[in-house]
Image (tube, rainbow, N blue to C red; front, side, top):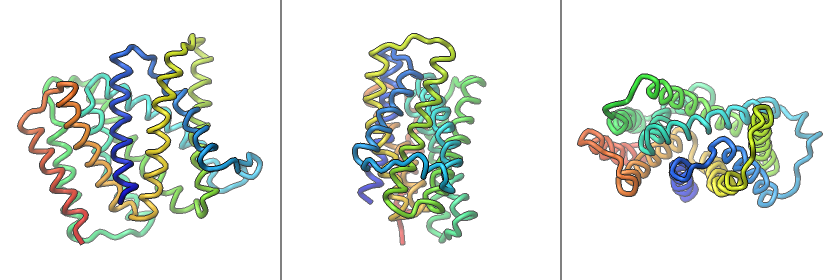
Length: 279
C-alpha cells in the first residue's frame, strides 16, 4: 500500500512539472527527451549494471517493450500538452478517467475477478472523474486532445500490466525492462530533435533531468504495487488518487476554477476509493 501511495504522489508531481514548463517557457519535447535519459540512468544506478543488450534482444518481451517505449514518449507529450492547454486538473482527469480500460484488461487477459464492492466502486469512480472533469468553455480541438489522452493512457496502463504479469519473473528482468522502455523513449525523442534540427538548450535538459526523478520512481513503485495488490485494486485507486490530489493542488496553487459539480466529483472520488478497498 505504501508503494501505491508513493506512486500517487509522484504521478501528481509529473502534472505539476508540466505546468511549470509552460510558466517558465521550457521546450516540453526537449525536456521530456532528457527526462527519459535521466530515468534510464537511474535504472542502471539503482537497479544494477546488469543490462546485456544481446540477451535482452532475444527475450520474449523485447519487441513489445520497444513498442511500449515509443508509445511512452508519444503519450507523455500528449499528457504535457493537455495539462498546459486545459490545466492540471483536466490533464490528470483525462489521463486517469482511463481507469476502466486496464481494469477490463486485467479481467480479460489475467483472469482477475470483480466482486460487488469493486464493481460499485469503479462505477462511482467513473462518474466522479467525469463530474470533476466537466468544465465549461472547452473547444472541440482540446476535447479531442483530452479523449486521445484518455484512450492512450488506458492502453498504456494495460500494456504495462500485461508485460509485467506475463514476462517479468525476476528483479533483473524488471530492471532490464524499465531501462529498455526509458532508453527507447529517449532515443525516439532524440531522433525527432535531430530530424527537425532543433537547437538544444541547457535549461531544457536540466528541466528534463528534474522530471526524470518522479517519472522513474512512479514507474518503479507502480510495478511494486501491481505485484502486491493486482491491477483491479491498483489502477482505480491510483487514478482516482491522482485526480483528487491534482484537482486540489490546481485549485489551491494555480487558481484553476472548480465548480460545485467538480467538487461533487471530488467527494465521490473519495467514496469510490473506500468502496474499492472494502473487503
